[in-house]
Image (cartoon, rainbow, N blue to C red; front, side):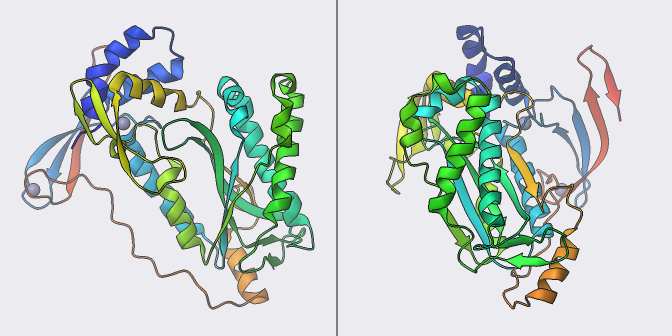
Length: 363
Ligand SMILES: [Zn+2]
Ligand SMILES: [Zn+2]
């Protein structure tokens, strides 16, 4: 199988030489992925719990754009949300921006992504507060920023999962939505667009945007899930998905990589052949600037919410008993490193961290 290890160590030096003025975040991501599990960041000595063999395991880089490291983060994110999930229906709402806005967003990423997060959560809250729909003062939702489409093209959008309801203003009562309807998406789209526009005006960017953008429909698709388990499980693989994932590299021959590809509007999977340097040039713009978050929690799922999930569950049961509980979960397997000889889990006996001043620390 071809992975980022067949691409980065071989082509990254040439890429860095060809594009010497890359943003710092891109350079950091390239170096981290290049050196991940190479021994550059130290290693651990682990012992197999079955055969007793000792093996050296190189440390991972931990960079949020590294495909190797994000598999673990995705699993942790899913477990965290399944632990906290509320009973009842959940809705997946996706907030896109029209294509003509994408170049501006790409050159003002921090401000534009912030505006997308704010506009999507405010628009949702404004309609959820309306008593014709839910009347809640506190809906909850994790929103996730995705910046690319199927061909690595710029396609920023925010999928977000909302539980079907919210808390009353005094936070003592659970107010449920309907089972298959959260808020009207036709009304949601223009509110989202108006809040985003106001933010762009405030940022002094409005004059750089083609006015036609404000006349286009900003469709917000919604998908109802019977319970949170299926909603979180369906979103999880893409939460920390990175543009340069191992699954997106089928093979490499010389300078040409083969990648899975789908045409817009088609479910048929094809393969595309691309020069590896061109592939890197398409992937790297999706590296987020430092300090720019890709997951944001608001409302009742935010850490500052005074009511913990257990209290909210109790309110839900008291006010609106339901029998559609999420399916039972099997406890997650610990993410242990496996013995290369017999496949049993290994236990770390010693960690060695490499100091790049040439000194090796033992921890
Ligand atoms: Zn073993
Ligand atoms: Zn890594």
